Image (cartoon, rainbow, N blue to C red; front, side, top):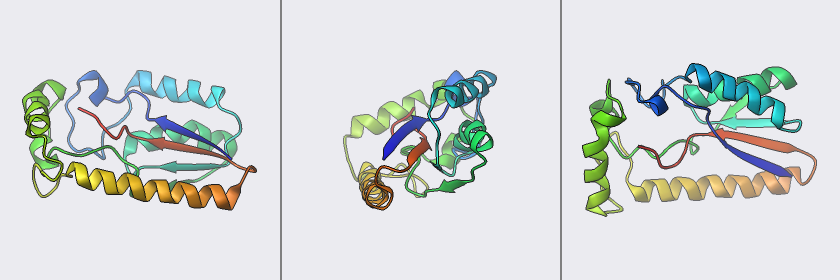
Length: 157
């Protein structure tokens, strides 16, 4: 079994656009082009797993169309949301820079920015859970399937 771990294509947030929520960030115009190019470069894909985030669905769309597939959403597969989504609404990377620095300066793996944010410990357990899922998939599908995972980075600004 071959597994491709693919980060979403360029998003509006990646080009410093203001965003409303982690899940609703869309691909930029360039990101849509990148998703099309990715589709041309990968071998045949049999199964696609994405996060609940819109930008991962958009990145996977050309593959899904090409191979007439649907996707599976995995709750463990998304970026590290260490900042409060409520606080970050309608902000860009420049607006959040001081909050990002303050979070990492704490160096506290159990710290949560707010009740709608994750601690680093939460991320660790989520990554472990996804790793266990990959082990099961490897045993289930052996060498007869290509598996493509479109995800967000686990660490982002």
